[in-house]
Length: 322
Length: 274
Image (cartoon, rainbow over all chains, first blue to last red):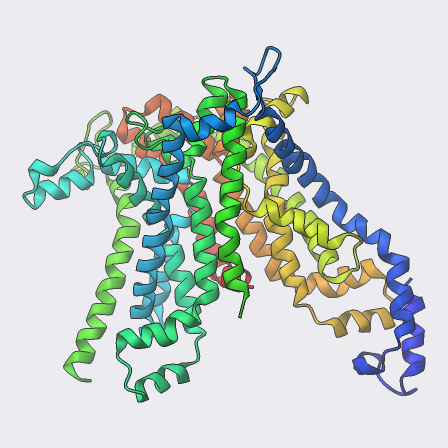
């Protein structure tokens, strides 16, 4: 195969030339046309294992989810066609609708706050001299991201409990009357769960944005200074545009985590109290494995997958255009 | 240095310290709690007058951690090498070889990049039940390979897109076939990319919670994270033991991260912004 494409290249080049240094322009069209043909179909073999596993364990189940969503099925007996009932329920049954609302509220905690605070932190830290301190800072900030979310859930469940650190601090500063069991409080449970998201995501965003700032040409900052720009206008004129790609990565990653959250909520509140912290991920799990409403769970699952795609798509487009 | 410059430096360092404190405090609280008197309910953050280091040993045996670690190791060994190898081959082909329907294949894989695991867990449960794999480690390993694949292919393709075309041409002229070109030229240059991917996949498998929770009933056949979930259900009221157990669970992820953090953070920066 390769020998077909090899020799003609050499023949067309000057006889003494090192093959690797043949300029691209002098490479003949002929071998390029024949060589890929001969290896074209064999190239599929390279992709086959990866795509095979993906097809069997992702694409096929996804198609099944779509199919299940039009049926009423308890997972054991025969399935009965349910038309669009399961889909209508997502928009009419309050607990399903609320779970989707909560997912969007979590975006504030998983995405808006970490990216916003990360930006502020990164632009302030920017001029800190590199050394042992900044390396330690980077490592420490990143730690919450690499731990199992289960452990994050357990750690924060303890932080929020009546004897936990949050209440301990409130008592210490004389705000005794504001202490409560945060995760079983109807008003504060969802924001409390949200703060766990901030904890997991903030370091990741800060570290990524810091690296991005490091790549911005310092001359741009000097030019801004010479133009008399203050800290704020410098931030909007230089830092923000320079971080476009990193911002897109942070936003995409954290939004998927927010909309599809499961581990932290399953561990800390299971969606409670009542339905105050219920999110689609936990609701899918409960519908399938605790209530045996497989059709309803599947409709919500397909809806969630589509929702994530619809939300992420425009952000990705934003990152690509220049 | 002017006073305002000093003030700015202090502000910056202070801000950074505050963020670091926020990141580390829940773990510190867990640590001091894990050392308290067994069965007591200590305060959130207080160094015990008489640290009970033995709590870690108790948690170790209560949760049957040896079996859990063994199980997690088997799952990681089943998932990571296979997934990295398949993703590397596919990423190389999609970037460097002329794969028929390559665009369509890559497009389908990209859809999987944003797919939440929960969206697939219901059909996966019934599929694995009909395959007779429910309750075995394969029920975690096989779906995980499929679920991690889109990211793996995306990551490796991004790396191989940046490979020098002149190297391929040179190898071809030397008479190397496609496999030899890949094996001798491109794979050695991709070491940092695939090893970073392996670390990420290690963390994703080790920390995986949903799949074991649903697909395997026996906690000793789960990942450590899945086992910790069961541990919480069982010892949820014994906060001292729970904190000790959680710290034991966290340790391997933390150690792997600290060993590879330099490469990992660097690779994430490069990979993420591609």
